[in-house]
Image 1 (tube, rainbow, N blue to C red):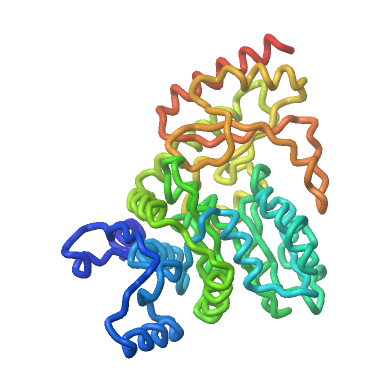
Image 2: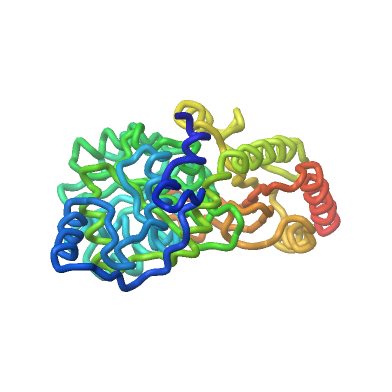
Length: 391
C-alpha cells in the first residue's frame, strides 16, 4: 500500500471493536484476569513482545493503534508513545546510554534536547559532544571507544542545515554506535529514516501528527533488534501517555497526508516570495534550489513541511519588533505543525558551541499554516512596511 492509504488504515482494527472505525478510548489502570493461568499467560506473552493488556501503563488498544500506525508508516519495527516530544527525545537517549558513555549530538539540535544533555544527562556521567551538522562521514573523527550514540536532526531546528544521514550512519555503525534521528520536520510521511541507516527515530507528534495545536505527544520507533531495550527502559521509567491525547493523535494522523501537502505548498510559495523582498538577506528552506543542502533534501526526502526560517538584512531589534509585533495572521509562539501560522525570533549564536553563528542578520522562523498564502503574504508585506518605517 502507498503511504496515503497506510495513514488511513494502519493500526485500526474495526473487527476487534464492534465495527467501530477508530479504536475507542480505553481509560484503564487496573485490568482484571479471570484466572491465575490467564494472569501468568498474559505476562509471558508480553515478555515475548506480544501486545496484550496487563495494566494500563503497559498499553491498551488505544495506544497500540497509534504506535502500530506510526511504525508502519515510518518503516520501523515497533513504536512507543510518550507524553511529549521532549520525553521521547530524552527516553530515546537514556535507553541506550549508561554512566561513562559518550554521545555525539548535532549542534543544530532542538533546544530542549540540548538542555537535557547538558543539564540532566551529564548528572548521570554521560558526556555530550556537539558536532557540526554538516560533518557527514567526518563524524568518525569525533568518535571514541565509548561513543554509543550519534544523535541527528535534519533539517536542523531554526537554522535548517541538512545532514547527510546515510554517511553519518555508515560511519557510526563502523564504530558500533547507534544512530538516533529527530524526524519531526518531515514527519513519517516525507522521510523514511530506517531506509537511510537510522536505528531509532523520534517524532514530536505534538506537531504534524496531531496537527491542531491541542495535544502534547511524542513517539519513538526502533529497529527490531533495539526494540526490547527501548520497551524495557520506557516501562522502567513509567513513561505512559493519556488515552485521550493518544486518541486525538491517531485521529490527526489520518489526515496527515492532505494537511502536509498544503503546508508544503503554502510554505514553498511564501519562501519563494520572501526571496524577492529587499528586506530579506536569505531564506533557509531546504526545498529551494539555492539552499546549501537542497541536493540532500532532493536525494533523501519525499517532501517538505511548512517550517523554515529567513534572515533579515542587518537592522535594529526595534525594527524586528516593528515587523513582528503587529502581524495579524502569524501568531507569535513556539511549537508548530498546527493549522495556524506562527512566527518567532531566534538567536542561534546564543547556544551554538561546535559551530559559530553570526547573528548580524536577525533570524525569523515561520511555520506556514493552512490559511490562504496570499493573505499570509499580505500580512508579511505589512510587517516589512513597518520594519522600513522603524529603521
